Length: 338
Image (tube, rainbow, N blue to C red):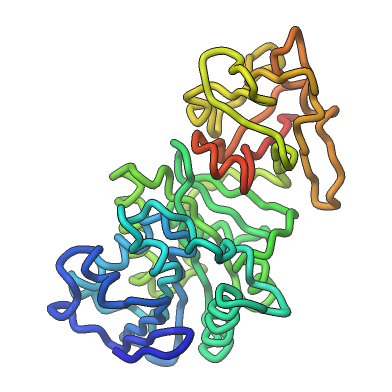
């Protein structure tokens, strides 16, 4: 294994030389690392990316287990383990990114300034040299949720890749600077959200999906019924406002969400269902963005006696119960049901 200023590299890892635990594996890597596993057919390559967020462990757990078991992929497998330093901060897998760094999965666009963007740029260069036939980027949701795929381009290829892991695909037109946005026009790319980060079932989803991805002779021959949803809206709390979680409106909070709001994930809520409480600012606490950056809050939400409700039935996705993520990233995504 070699290390450089930006990315480490580990070619043809020998299973017995890989740490027995995923924590030991990350200690061996020490920095963002590209791992190359030769396939039976060395003329083709598939790419697998994981741990772009240091608190989302299912993908790297799956990769560690898969390498330790000595699998030989059908084609070359080019793997990337991203936020290694963040994941290693005690307690393991509790930090999304290194303090003072940006979210790595918001850095995949020029001008690539700063150490986090340098990592993103280096991984993109590795991918473009390899010219993979597909790329899967594995994540976890920050709350409880079933597994699902996300793509910026919809089609049979994206559905086939998603079907290795899940029955649900979301096609989004929102742009955030993610890996899949940077590669969508070069090869089929999907992000896989395996479910909650602390759920053993999520780790198993990641492992089984990786195993199917690596062993499939051809990716265009996969068949599985996929439910596709298009263009969810991203819901944020406005900058400088305070969010809380509770069983009633919390004093001093501009927005209070239920303690178990993540139980709503992928469920359809009616216009009468209670979604939270807002303070005196009303709907002005929310920013509900579409792909053009327009605020659609008044079309999606309404306030009734301080209760936050929906204008019409909608599906909630990626709701989190972690206030730091809700504050710095987003509250959840919403998709009106037609």
